[in-house]
Amino acid sequence: MSIVACAQALTVRYGSRTALYEVNLELHVGELVSVVGPNGAGKSTLLKALAGLISASSGRVSRVSAEAHKLAYLAQSERLPGDFSARELVELGRIAHSGLWRRLSAKDELAVEGAMRRTSTLELADRELGSLSGGEQQRVALARALAQEPRLLLLDEPTSHLDLRHQAELLAVVRREAEGGTCVVVVLHDLSLAAQTDRCVVLAGGVLRAQGRPDAVLNAESLSQIYETPIEVVRTHAGELAVIPTRFAPTNSGATT
Image (cartoon, rainbow, N blue to C red; front, side, top):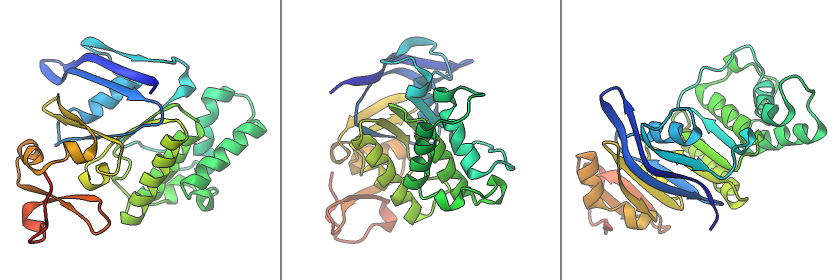
């Protein structure tokens, strides 16, 4: 499987605090990767380092392509221009292709429309961002990233403002992007959503504690240690993993480890 980007012994420090310590990670074409871990684990720092927004204190990050449009990054929280329409924001995703002052081409228009259709935001196209809910703004921001047509898509907690329906829809959207050849890396707090990705990367205290298939990595014993609370991992009737604190787990759940 072709490598899109990799981190080699990546260490990032903020002053005297080490946010990431010697992380080794390869990212591949067509892969949907979740990054999970407790607060302060270094998840956002890892994404920023992969995006080139912060520098490594030691080690390195390398990407196959240095072209700007090959990488899109969606921050955890971003203040959007309230007087822009949703479509105008999504059109900004084409700047890396068209330049700042050139009019959008027919290809650009198709990319914008396609991104808005895939994120169910076409109906919001003419609405000002300031009039949208937090969840709607999140979906429009994702559409902007998709309009860029990246080969590496980095998403920091994109489900944070979404209800259950739109969380599921977003995961389906990024799954299709991965199936189309994009490498998608998404930071998630919901471990049950992370269980639906191709690979889980588990961080704690800035250290990469585990990575691999969700059914191998998301086990009750290690998660309970990492999150410092009792956790159960159960199978749903559909055969999917669900990760929940023990006090909310059903009895006789058949927890997996």
